[in-house]
Every structure is written in structure tokens, then in C-alpha cells.
Length: 466
Image 1: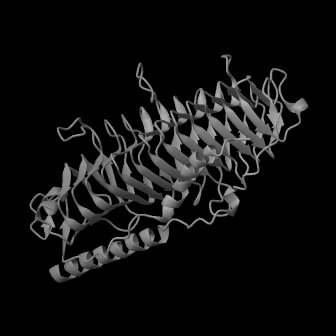
Image 2 (image 1 turned 45 degrees about the horizontal axis):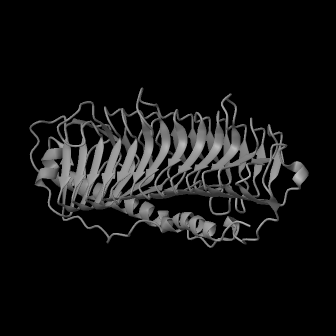
């Protein structure tokens, strides 16, 4: 029987699911003045401005700034110590900022349609990043892109940020998105894909922060830095007790072809990842991420359901150092085609060094080692799962591993050395959880309303000017 303390860790991971109730709802924005930016007109006079920076410099609380679609502005822009500020263009159109956007100590900031690319290692810390948000709350980035930056795409510190509609944070010279030091980051991808691909080092990094994602999302092709130590080339990395819940709500989630692993959880961090369920109906794929698809170490926790983990050379999932995983739990996952390399310790799932795993309702097949490998005081609870064509058999464990399973002893691998006990009846299932949907409707409605207000101010000002 799996010790009851295991469920404390699993429930800790499941708490992430409820964090997606949505970001705090700011009060309705009202604009007391509106500015127009024309970066092609150096002689523009207020309320028209020749740069975004000039407009922000003249702004007070409650200012909207309109930038025409397709406009390109080469400058660094800092929004500092302001409230109720918006920079936008036509709805779902874009304009370009060649430089850095910094949001510092501000509240209720809406950025719409901005495409940021910072080509230099500027003097503003952190250097070379496209968008930086520090000590700010209720920041919304709607259909914003931060791409081809010399360093990272988006760096968040002690802030509350929502990526609304869709977004692209790709092809950057460092981390695609970094959420650090007690930040909250939400993805509401109701309008398209959130793409965090083709970055260097880490795709999405969470350090002592909370991340909620309601996909469509792609976190693919993260490049490793030559000679760097882990985490390196990882799609998703969590440090310092970070918590994340990422679900395939509006579209599929892909975490694929990241050179150093799909997901890496450290230091009591937690991740709930899943799809193919009533409130998140799309698939989740973790595929071809080097040696291991998902790794949890040093007391970290994973909850996985409705997910395919496939195509890794050592293991699909690896748990080490008192880490825990609850896999499937009411919505079947597929752990297949892993362990394709030649090294030792290959398996579909590896559980070792005091780690614990519940595997319920999963399909585990065609792995180049046993389906599940338990080593060095591992604890396994395996029930209602299907095993087929795994090299070494369904489950292999050493004498120090505790195994509870409904599989007959004849189905276990020939090298199996553990004593088999009947499975526990824990009664936990994701399919029966009462989960509140993320509040994406509010975020969507507010962004649309703000855009309508900004365009109305702009059109009124244009009419009066004539």
C-alpha cells in the first residue's frame, strides 16, 4: 500500500488546478486623455507625438496611446509609476517596437498588438530582453509578440501578468518567458496560439512563481547553450517551489523537440499538465525532448492526465529524490516509445531514490526498457493500466521498492524483485473534480472594451482636427 503521505504531495500538485480561476480583476479602466503616435513624423505636436516614449512621458494616470497599424518605432519605452495606461492599435492588428518595453511599478497596464524586437544588449537591466515587467500588477499583453531579441523575450519580476488572446515569444537569444520572484503569469489563449518556441536555454522558466496556462500552446525547439549546466535546452523549467497548471483548453499543447528535456521540476516545484478531459478537451504531447520528457527532482510533484509522452532516449518520465507523480487519474495518458537509446536505466517511467508514483488508467507500451522501473526505496501504486511490448516487461523493481498493483505476478518483468501487494483504493479522479474554468471571458471582454474606447477617442480626435 502506498503511504498516505504520498497523497499530501499529490494534492499539493492538484492545487495548481484551482489557481487558474484567473488573475485579479482590475477596476474598469477610464481614460481621461488620449494621445496619437506617428513615429514617421518628427515634427508632430501634442496630442500627436513622434514617438511612443514622448507620449508616455506626457501621460498621466488614465491615458490611452494609439499607434497606427504597421507603424515601426525604434526606441526604448518605459512605463513607470502610472495607473490605467494603454498602448494599442486596431483590434488584432500589430505595430513594431525596435527596442525594449519596460513596465515599472505600474498598475492596470494594457498593451495590444505590439511586436517587440530588441537587437542590442542595452544598458537597462536585464540587457537584451524585449519586454521587462517589474513590481507591477494587472498587466495585460493582448496579441503581443516579443521575438528575435538578443536575449530573452519576456522577463517578469514580482508582477502580475496576463497574456491574453494569443502571443509569440520565440526565436530569442535566451529564455522565452521568465517569471521570477513571486510573480503570477496567466495564459488565456482564446484567440490563437501562445508560441514559446525556438528560444535558447529555457523556453518557459518559473522561479518562486505561479503560472496558469489555458492553451493552445507550443513550447518547442528550445536550443541548448554549448557547455552550459542544467537547466539547459529545457522547454519548461520550475525552481524554488514554483507552481504551474497548464491545460489544453482552447487547443492542443505541444512540448516537443527541446534539446535538454521537455519539463524539469526542481526544489518542491509542482506541475499539473493535461488535456482530453471535459473542461480541457484537446490533446497534450510531450515528444522527442532528448533524454527525458518530464523530470521531477528534489521533492517536486507532477500531476499528469490525458497526455502522450513519447520519443525520449532514456525515459518518458523520471522521478528522483523524494519526488511524486500522479499519472492518468481518470483521463488516460500514453507513455510509449521511450527508452530508445542504448544507456542503462531505460524505461517508460523511472522512479527512484525515495520517490513515489501512482499510475492509474495509463497505457504504457513499446518502451525500450520496462514500462516502469522502481529503484532505491521507490513506492509504486499501479492500477487499471495497460502494458504491452515493453522491453523487460511491465514493471521491474529492486528489493527496496514497494509495489502495489492489480497486475498478476506473471505480467511483471523477469528481473522484478519486489513483493507485490494489492493496489490501494484512493478514490481520486481528475474526471470527477469540480474545477472552475479560468476567467478568460473577463480578460477577453476587457481587452475588447478598452480597444473600442481607444479607437473611439482616436476617431473623435481625428474628426475634431479636421
